[in-house]
Length: 296
Ligand SMILES: Cc1ncc(COP(=O)(O)O)c(C=O)c1O
Image (cartoon, rainbow, N blue to C red; front, side, top):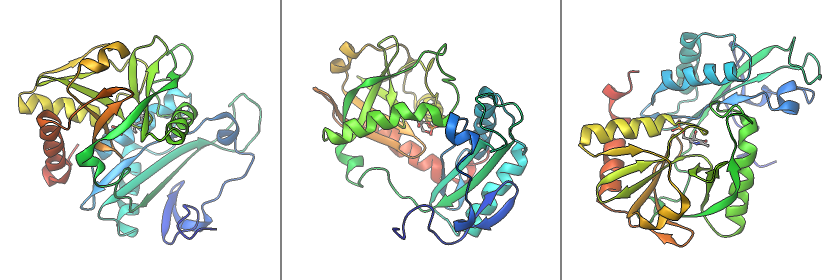
């Protein structure tokens, strides 16, 4: 086993109200959440020991579980406190937090009735999703054959593990074809998002982002829309067709893990890392590092 594997690290994580040694946080193979996908999670970033938008993430974890029909047995305050304590005990000043909730192993019927709800929170150092020079050069995306499903087919508002099957398939295909990430369209054929981030396009000095009506409306996406307002940059949410992609000047992805990630190309369409993208990147960086913007 690799010493960097995520199940083989030192320290502690939080599991159902207790701090447990990292390597002891194990599940039974007959866990309902493992078989039927009843797991929801969050990804949070730590900057200088503070968790950016902690309450928004904890709230979304609660809402995601609710969308899947269960209630997390810990309050927002309890989870926030546990998160900060995990970060502190692990000595993380800049890193990542992964809260996850799932249904337990009482039975293996497809019905979830009678299953218990569980939560764990782990934190570790994790500097960048892509290489450091990807921030200046931009990454290359290809359009996936996989699509984001309709709200009638899946709990699209939840950050649910089951929805990440599509993302993993899309990302693996993009990797195999030599791209950095994939762009997914939605079930109607509109431009949706990347495998772990939302998409912004720039035309002139105006931002455009797809209407988030069937995929995750990211917390970073919202932060960028707020920042655009502060910077006096017009931002428009609307449906975007793939045929329009070649008409934009700049493109970037937003997400907790990706932060603001410039895109160099989507298939044949090319973009520059221009002044609007750079202004948003700088403003976002200033925001996440500011102790005053962490209060939620
Ligand atoms: C599929 C997907 N879309 C969008 C996002 C961006 O969400 P956020 O900004 O809340 O991290 C993420 C990351 O969590 C994601 O996994």
